[in-house]
Structure formats: structure tokens, C-alpha cells
Image 1 (cartoon, rainbow over the protein chains, first blue to last red):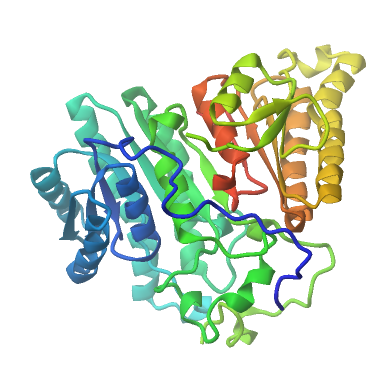
Image 2: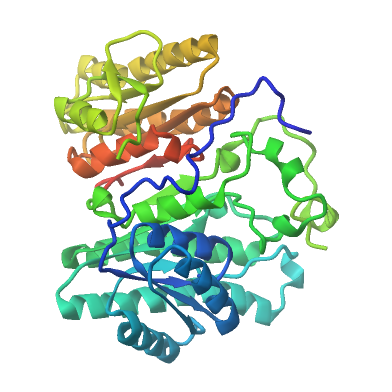
Length: 293
Length: 167
């Protein structure tokens, strides 16, 4: 169903009007994990709009390079590199490489993750390990490597984590990601406390539905247009407004902000009623929106 | 940055510093009438043990921290609906658990009210968010300005803090 014409939809400013100045991250380097496409690329582009040098990291170097090319377009230096964030030695080597190419990393965006709808009983051990460990171990390894380096330099920094709107409710039909994204949010709050004495801030965005070319829903037949009406806000999110909020948490404009998990989902996770449509178990909605088949 | 350029904002119990910050972001502060933004701040009640709170103190904290906020928000939303325009509401107040049980009740109630109204009024284009903190500094002011601006057009029903005092 289309959104009825009399409903009022709030829209963000266009991409070329970011909420901060073009030099707010001037002289600083951000490392964006999973930065080659999708939400990570949106984060990377938002930091670039504030003048940061951007290290675009991904398991696939080719994808990271494609993302870095999009950053170059914005007039800042970018460097693409490959890393599997599940391995501490690879993470340390990646930080070394970025320091050599762009200078010390003082901003970190943890976006690396995988997600796909699948019934819990059908999640293979490999799939479980991949989804949970990229997000959970990867966020831990990148954040702790970042913090050790900042602390040894005697300088602060800021981390932003890409979490999800379903971290408080569970996500039936997506058990691996439900676990992984919540771990990111809860470690956000604890790391913020651990590192507050060192001037390192840690925040997360509990992101809703921001369709992009590599998202599962973005590939569905008919595109995402039919999905707008399911969100209370009357639309799915624009990927640049997610990037902006992520980067904004790392600016001096919000220098006291830490330990926060900010919900940005157009009310999606909050819509409910005591009387709701019949419950359909994930097993029986294979072909529906976010179906697993 | 002009996050609030062209917008009118009404502050209830807001500090002069908050008003100045919103003005610096381009907002025009108004005393009443139909406007684009409502920010309702509630002064924190003193920290008291529950068994030492009189009923009058208890009721006063709930009135300031919850009841009045609901009535202001409802009036604002009705006015926005009548004018057919979108709007943004922000509640600012103390964290839930750092003061007395009166604030614990008011803060918890306000949080879930925020989540509820954020969805109930979503298709009116009215967003509702809350910041629960003891902070009263530039970060709070900038966060407030962001949350009531169009940059936060996809943020509604969000209840958050500022630093590490929001448990």
C-alpha cells in the first residue's frame, strides 16, 4: 500500500548539506570497517564530508577500492585495504598500514558485518560464526586496537558502531544478527566507561531500514517502494542521514556524548498494538518481506 | 550551522543557555502559539530516599516530570495537526535512576511515553524524543538542536542520555 497522501512525511536535507562544516574532521583519519559499500560507505562518505582522511577497509580489497573511489570524489584522501576483522594480527597490521598511508587513526567506525534472513535451525556453524564473530569479535578487536594506540599516544578519539533497531526486541528469523548487533550495543556502553578516562568516546546507532544496493531488501523484486508504508515515519531511511548521525557523534559538537545507543529507525521498532495481525512463524513466511527463501 | 534556520521553537523551563544555543542554530524562540518545535525541560527533583518523600513532593515531581509534559505535548501536536505542518518535540530531564524514586517513576514513564507518542504521531510528521541527563552543556544543547532539526527526520521515539549518567 502506498503511504496515504494526507500523511505528513519528514525528510532530511539533501546530501550536499551536511550538518557540520567541511573541516570539522580536518587533519584526522577515520577507519571504516566494511566501508566499501552500503552503510559503511555511507559512514565513510559522511566523515569525508567533514574533511577526514578515510581508510576504507573490507574483506574484499576490490570492494574497498570501489568505496575509496567514491571517497576520492569528495576531495579527501582515501586508502583502501583488506582485512578480516576476526583476526587480531590482521587488525593490528591494518592499523599499521593506515598509519603509514594516512597517519594515526583517531576516529573509528565499526560497520563490518553480515546479515541475511535464515531460520535458526538452518544456520550452519559457519554462518553463525561468520555473522556473530565479524560483528562481535571484529568490533572488539578493532576498538581495543584503536584504544591501545590512542592511549599510548596520550590522545583521545571517537568510535561509532553500527548496531540495529532490533537489539531490544529480538529478530525472529535472523537469530545470528539479533545476537551480534546487541553485543555491539552492550559493549558500546561498557567500553565508553572503560575509556572515558582516556578521552575516548564510544557510541552506537541502532539503525533501522536504510535500503542500499547491497541490502537484502534492496534487491527484492519491485524494489523498496512498496515497503515505505510499513514504517511509522512513512518512509525507509535515506542512507546519508544514517552516515551523518554516525559521523556527528564523533564531532566536537557532541564532545560529551558517550555510551549512547541512538535509535534511528523512523519508529519501526516501536510500532505495535495489543491487537496485531496474525502471527506467522518465520518458518511459514519464507516468501514474505525479509523472507528467508 | 543553521540546523534550525526558519524554524520557530518554544521552550518550557529551558535555560537561557539552551535558548541561546537554539538561536545560534537559526531558530526563532517564541513564547507560545503554533510553532515548529517544542522543547520541554523539567528541573530535576532533589535526591531523596523514598520513605522520606512526602506525598506532596512525590506528586510535584510526577506533575513536573510527566503530567505537564504530556499536556504540553498534546497541545503542541493538536496545533501542528490543525496547521497541517510537521513538528518536533523534545523532552529534557534528569536520568531515571540517579536521584529519587519520584524521578525513577517520572523518568521511566516519560521514556515509554516518548516511544509511544513518537509512533502515535508519526504520520502527522511529529517526532518525539527524549534526552535524560544531568548534563547542561554544549553537547546537550547541540544534541537538542540536532534532535529537533530536519537532520533527525528519521529519529523518533528515541530515549537517550549524553554521558555516562543515564542509567
